Image 1 (cartoon, one colour):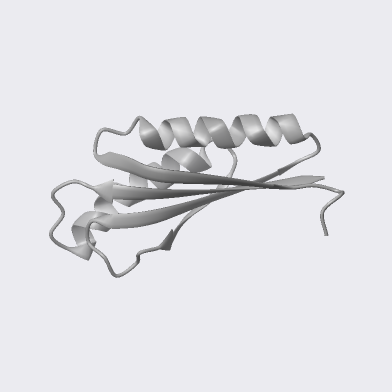
Image 2 (cartoon, rainbow, N blue to C red):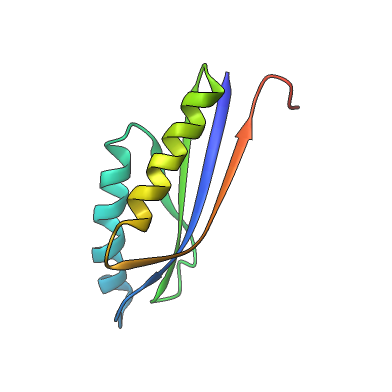
Length: 97
């Protein structure tokens, strides 16, 4: 079993309130979840223009996990209302403790 995690640090456009931030972040999270991963806003919760999006998945094959996380990163990077500042991938497998 392999577990993958992705952290995407994003900058939002002209956002003036947390309500506006949620209205931009919520559809991105919904689209990520359609890829059958777990997704949540995991950081920068009190900042208007920044968000840390967390994604995780589990699969029997490491290649499948990597492919899925790369697809999620491309999805976030392709959203015009977001600027992807950084993305961090992690992979845990049977040899990790």
